Image (cartoon, rainbow, N blue to C red):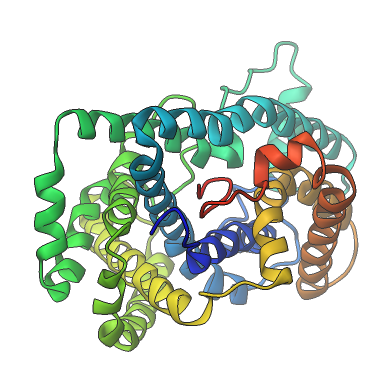
Length: 383
């Protein structure tokens, strides 16, 4: 079955999760909540941004890790552990090694330039400007930037090999056999300790030093996707719950925003972090399940546009942030509203990324590395 069937909805969900990252990162520049922390934070900002983007933040990457786990199990069943590791080193490890230094260097250069010349700098740019004027400015710790997810996927593939070697299949069969209502209640509880140990909204684990909370949060989603492979009927078991999960998630998101407005919780304040961690965990799981159900119903098909976007999404995600930074730095001194700046930054970033993919990448060895169509399901972080 896995040799001949392409899981279009998983391909398309993966692509949408990546492409949504462009919109999410563009929106952060106009978020009042993130204004003190984001390099491109603009003087034009709106609470409407915070009203929307943090919901996307809670399930976009969890959905991606579910899809990655799904395709990892497919590859393992088709090619064996050796084939999985070799494929993932080529599709995940090699792009990380090649592009991570390049995109970080590009973002560092544009940020230093902006810190020196932007007339209306963000708090982060002001801080960088002050540091740059010191005789011996402190060096930034090495990190993975927005490609952190590739870094953690490599760990998850190694842990897959460990779990396979220890023959830990019985717990997976037990989880698959649980009543879906119990799955939807117990799964979020697994995530609470990890989320309670970091600030909210949870940060991106960009450090080269592995962040253990990230294993505790994203790891279960990877395992969930792994358990779905070959058992796609499990998604249908969530279908009757999907409308209620969506409504409950929206209601909980209102509580999430209310608690954030009152007090941004940190790991040092358990009384505030535990309730919001429980809300984050429930929304992350339930909205991911809603996306899986909707994707299987609406996106389990392929056409030229969907295939093209699926192929291009890996490249778009890798290069979008350096391009977005340059655009938003140029917009910082423009006396325009946040809506116009947001729309321009999103459209311009997508346009440049897709044009560069079509003209410079698609038919090259880089295109084959990042999104070449294979006769089996999945591309890039899929299969």
